Length: 336
Image (tube, rainbow, N blue to C red; front, side, top):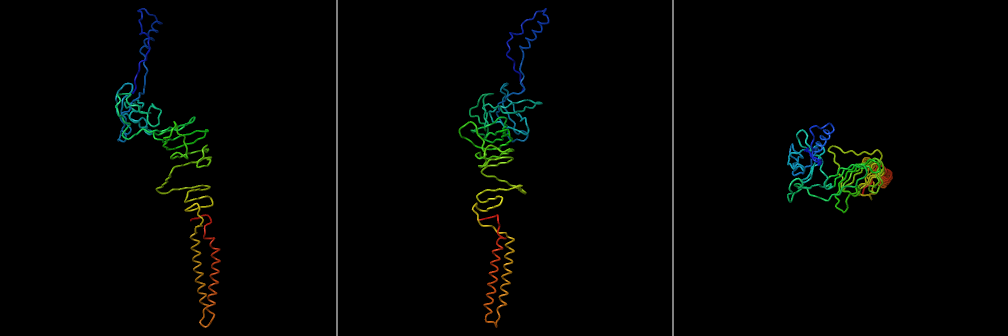
């Protein structure tokens, strides 16, 4: 809310002016008069928040409270920005301005230099013992992240950060969440140690990721678990190489292991095995039929000839198996 404050200028009053005053005397008199009644105009006024409306239709994010200068209570103060809103907690001070008869609040005054809360209740009005920040909000120790020259940061109240980092004059975006209640004033971001992180780089970064030096254009993601779900489809495409490394699945350029990193059994190529089995059954059937032809009731050695014929066919089939096995065993995929 705009207001004026009279300057404390001691001119001893405007003084007297003679009835026959000349130009210079009149000009000096007017200057003294103006200085005596000069005021400073303030378009914005800080307000101490006493109530916050959250999800009420038509009043989402509205606050009410008391102005710090004029000590006037006012309600239904609307957020100034429609797309970026910082909701204050009770006791925090916000800057308020009037536009076309409606009061709007903008940023929270950084009274404590804290990212968690800057509540100082009882400044605009009498302090009420036991004043709470809100229904559920609880104060926590949250360390702000370390910053560098020219960086831009957006920091939440509980350890969420969006950091436009410009270290080494190269573009990087760091998104992270981390609960850090250790000693110290600031949190040093670490993709390996923070709770959850997404880094976007153009020219790599100075710190290693999973023990590997990162260079060039990369998107790095780290957390205890990463879940990706597509309602219709999920596509993963690598122009050169896809790598997966886990205890039960390893995918490299020339080798895939299923079930264990120690997998040694080559998997079967189903179509090739199917064809081989069909041929084998056909060969056995042919060998059996040929052996039956050798058996003649009048020939005493017919049974021996039949066995010999069948045995020869089985030996041939075994040799064929040794050769064909290379066709239905995968060269790159192993399992346990």
